Length: 420
RNA sequence: GUGGGCGUAGCUCAGUUGGUUAGAGCACCAGGUUGUGGCCCUGGGGGUCGGGGGUUCAAUUCCCCUCGCUCACCCCA
Image (tube, rainbow, N blue to C red; front, side, top):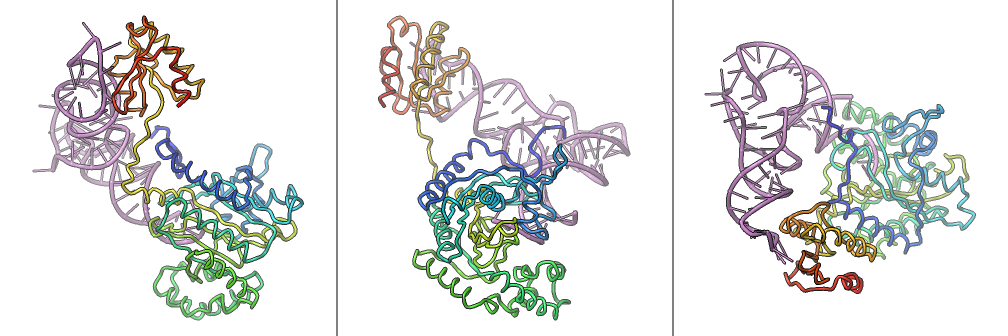
């Protein structure tokens, strides 16, 4: 296999698909900006320590999924596996809090994780993310979730659901985790092999296991809600109320667990059963401690990120039989002899200078071949020029939509399209 | 890292109980009209049958190894 091709888990996005990306990106930009978010672009490669501290040393992402290498100066650098840590780094580095107490940012771009690819999962994938920084309030939580819900609807996606949960603060979660471990330890021998490991590494994950016996044990386990303080409960209730008022449909799922260490309190996932095993196409939550982990002061924040490849799968799903015909537009120049070819070269440039989509062959071709190509490439008009036209100083302009044609003076050609 | 499925033309796939020049549809190019597209007709180009090794008179077909793709586990967007 000496054929050159993309490496495992990295995919080309071809012209036939790029329309979906443009629609997604444009819709997100427009919507986010009406909610007061501004774009930020951070580097793809960062100091490895940013992610070790930000995402959490013991998370799976940091432990085995990062594209980490030493640069030529001997520094350990990492291709970003997610966006939030970088945005927070930029926020602290440039003291963005100085401009206003609240900072609203969004970003879009490629992320990298060394995993085995499968449906909806690539090693280079793309995320659009949002971070609302500087305030700890259920109003902020609700704002970003509502915004995400509106985005999904604007994109015409209907087969999805929103699941929410509260993970509690770090202080609330600690005793709860001990409680949970105590509960499951009594049934260690009944847990599946994976969950035996989870019991030590990440007991919350057991709640999310798909093995039947584990599910049963998880059902009997104490829930996080038992451990939440009144204040956290009230905040969660307020959050739900705001969603209700905005007409956002959700279900509370106490099994939602976040994979990155920095989440606390509100957590949410937008999921669809049309995505295969990786059903979440957007997820996020509150992360009040991230700034602390990065060595700054506390910056209470909430955000989410969208898996672009996954949400585009849903956009495609929605396209049913939408045999959207390409719009016919532009002018194809079809010279029939050598001298006309040169004249058309000039016309080609004139048209393009006027902003008209124009194209012609790079070598002399038969009229049939030129007509076929004009048709194949969805041009609306063909300019035909042979000896007859040239001597009269005109071209034959054919409308491929209805087959009608007329004679147009060469000098009038550009202005004809310029007006339209 | 683990497990299942699959690799034949640009794409979707037939095929051979091992046997001469490996097929179809679509796509592409050309001709049918020496100046007129889409439909139709005719013709053409294009394949190291993923790669390597083995068995055999003979391998795309059987065996082994390997690479790749894909789905799932783990985990995550």
